[in-house]
Image (cartoon, rainbow, N blue to C red; front, side):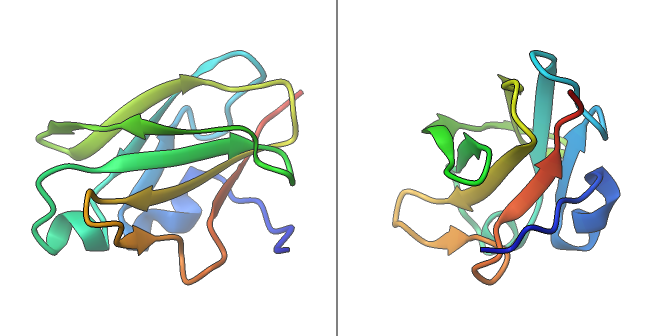
Amino acid sequence: MNLFKATSNEYLANGVIVTPANPEAYENVTIVYNGLLSKSGATELFAHVGFGPDWQGAQDLKMIKTKSGYEATIPAANVESLNVAFKDPLNNWDNNYGQNYIFNVDQ
């Protein structure tokens, strides 16, 4: 498992950003995606999110299409990281080449 955790700008080149850049536990986090799947013409996207090294509370959130890309908001859990991957209805994934998108959650 990759233990690297990023601030929001680390994945900007892949079209992935979170706001706030360094979320705190229980704070709402907005995930914005304008990456490979959206650029490949996906008309619907889901953020697969979980927390900590074991993806606690893993769930798929339907993302909303905006002028910035696709967005979803979730409260950050009281664990060290927010883990995200993206998928479309055809089960095509953008998981950062198997590394996932992992963001620090400040305690």
